[in-house]
Image (tube, rainbow, N blue to C red; front, side, top):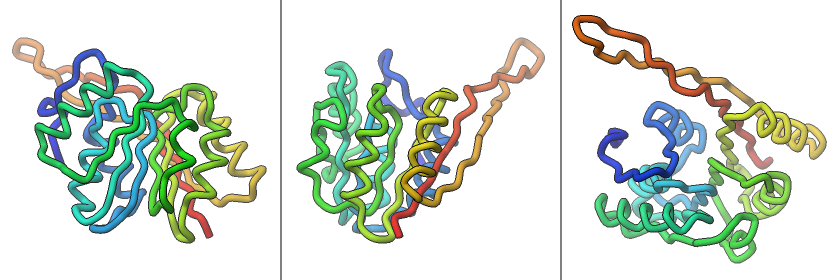
Length: 186
């Protein structure tokens, strides 16, 4: 796994390493998986997924031009050639995707239900959706969607605290808690 500090960041949010590890584990990416990363930000998840699936294809969907440029720079930096960047606000850009083994949602721009509608039809049987939610509203929308559509899911909340050196002391530096919601198409 790549250290957070190795990514080119700018002012674009990035999924932290510990959350990336769990998200990718929940997605169960294989060497030839076809994956979409929605709200790709810096491309940290897309790049890690590309390294897990060297014979697969990763579609990084991002709406912000600044973030798209960072993804391009990070793709080049980490020499992954199986990432296709799509500058669009999901669900735009999803219709043309091939059948997917995994869909990872890091940002939805308030269009989560529409995104989930399309993603579920694009997922192969056995494919997995993994959603990272920072806000309670996103969590509530996702859970309600899965319940009303009869889709089985699991959800875990992760709280990461790192130590930060402050003079002669070590201080707790808490990161935002994140809900990781996983659903499998059966």
